[in-house]
Picture (cartoon, rainbow, N blue to C red):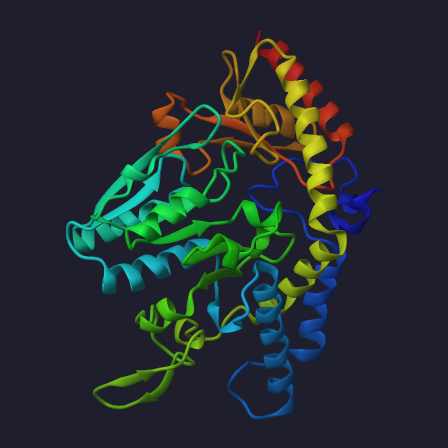
Length: 398
């Protein structure tokens, strides 16, 4: 099935080969139509005015909250907090839970393949509170090097990726979550890459917090999701102050609102949140079984094609086991930025750089990598053209 027909950008740019989906995905027509429909029919502020238009906009906004709750398997839609992006969600937890619940000499456990968004907020907490930040090592297949002894009585918080944005690896989180909870530690999962490729059930996973972004899931930019267990969100102080996050305000004090409004100060990206429902519904219509089947076949095909180039080195897992469709590589004697520029001249979009993962790059002695990230709308012909362009880049520099 040709899924590209669902995405107008491929009609406007018929020569486009888009292989940078881990940075942001393209948007299907149903999503674009949903945003247009919101502004044409519903545009109003939410949770405020008593008139009918505000009520309809509020209903649409809260319908998305319910859709997101269903999407990740929580029965409590008030455990869903809308943010600008996953980065804000992690910062919210670090600022609110971290400041209120962690003390000097407490330990936060991360891994060396975390995105900067899941490192810097905890280093900022270290500066504010004096907590210790420690990192799990990563093996050559992109799995955490872990045993239960690495979580001690000092470990109070664990924050880990559910899928690497550099290696494409999907680490086994369950033993770490179990070990963390056995020691009384809380755990946050960065599901930015995972949520678009695989179903998530937060009750089965038993994560305390989980974040992801709409724009990587065929939805709009400027919308993120923070899931938090009800009992934790209730005891956390507000992250930002302003309208909507309060019940009462007096000259010398205020009373915060209930969750999730306590964490949604000010006018949110209403159109983006309403539109995100269309993206989730679109994913649901295709189904994760179909999506995973297509992406796994494309990933295996790409790995085989890239492995056949003797001057190219794959970074991370070489098979489709415990991985998804993000593939990083290096080319002998050629900087990744030159690779990306060479492919860009052929209308092929890939990513090059440290991918907001400088610690992993430094640990593995890499200045940068080139990265192909696939979506279900990509094709084997896309890969063939990308591989041919890579061959031409190599010949140009040699």
